[in-house]
Amino acid sequence: MAIITPGTRRATFAIGDERAARRVVDLLNEALDQGEAAVAAFERRDGGWDISVHFAELPDETSVRDLVGLAAGGDVAQRITFDTVEAKDWVKASLEDLVPVHAGRFIVHGRHDRARVPANRLGIEIEAALAFGTGHHGTTRGCLLLLGEVLRSRQPRRVLDLGTGTGVLAIATARALRRRVLASDIDPVSVHVARDNARLNGAGHLVKAICAPGFSAPEFARRGPFDLVLANILANPLRQMATPMAAHLAPSALVILSGLLPHQAQGVIASYRARGLVLRRHLVNGGWSSLLMQRA
Ligand code: SAM
Image (cartoon, rainbow, N blue to C red; front, side, top):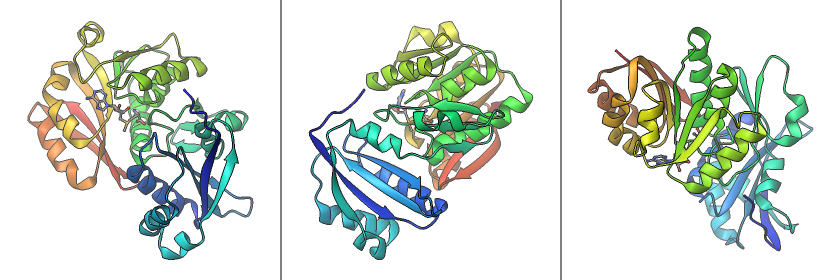
């Protein structure tokens, strides 16, 4: 999926180190609509970091400075430069800037970094940004880290990635296990993106992507009960899904939940505990909580 515009406006600013860059990217991603802007961080040759934001429409530069000021401080906001990039796919342009994300045994990267994935890592190439999940968000990274931990001791047979976005978690699981994974999303565009990405990563035959809100398709009963469910959504939908989720779990199933802020974690844990799940791990990554829970 690509958005072609006659020329897009880009804001660029320098931002200290990698840690600061990731924090500001997260904050900007939260504040800006995905269809409105694409945010990317990249490392300069001198080791410093830059952030660029590509806008689909001409942005109000004062508002952009205000937003960056909130996320990164007034000094940084004053040093923003705006320019216009020539006509091309602006989402792709922003992805070209993305640095690979290291998450345990996984590396999520763009096409330009394909050749740089070390042999002992599993690379997942994500090229489309109209769905959520380039790996740069703390929630995706948290899920990948927990997934890596799970796969050290288990080989789940029936896997579901609920709220698949770009398909990143489904692809990671399918490739690591060499098993079929069901991926679902409420958003039809994400479903197409996930299918394309699965094919791009040689997992087209392993990842079945379907469009469905929550557990509302017959496919869930057909492909379940699941030994592992990954659900990186938001706290409220996760709480609402606790009952249907529990109904689709095999005995001792593992569930990775993310998309929640640390102060929301206890409420989500309580909802799943009430359906017979216990907390195994609570990871905080980039200001976001990821939970590993298990059906007792
Ligand atoms: N799994 C990807 C990752 O970890 O990067 C994407 C996660 S993104 C935060 C959440 C995804 O869940 C979005 O693609 C959104 O469309 C989808 N979603 C939100 N509510 C949903 C629901 N009720 N049922 C299925 N998918 C949902």
